[in-house]
Amino acid sequence: MPSRKKKAARAPHQQQQQKKLYRSRTDRRIAGVCGGIAKYLDIDPTIVRLIWVLAVFMGGMGILAYLLAWIIIPEEP
Image (cartoon, rainbow, N blue to C red; front, side, top):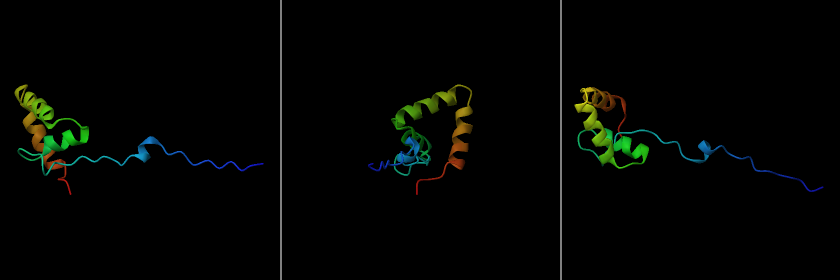
């Protein structure tokens, strides 16, 4: 009888490197928050910035959210 050796299948989340959210050092206008979020979501930073500006004009919560993100999200190593 031939021995059947199977390689242990890894879960998809283990095969890819864990993504971490950081403020961008290179793609920044103020603090790198939008650039970091765009890099994490793999989208254009301009889209994130436009959404953020809309949030500012739709009640002003965008400013508070940006400041909190600036404090909470660490800068890229």
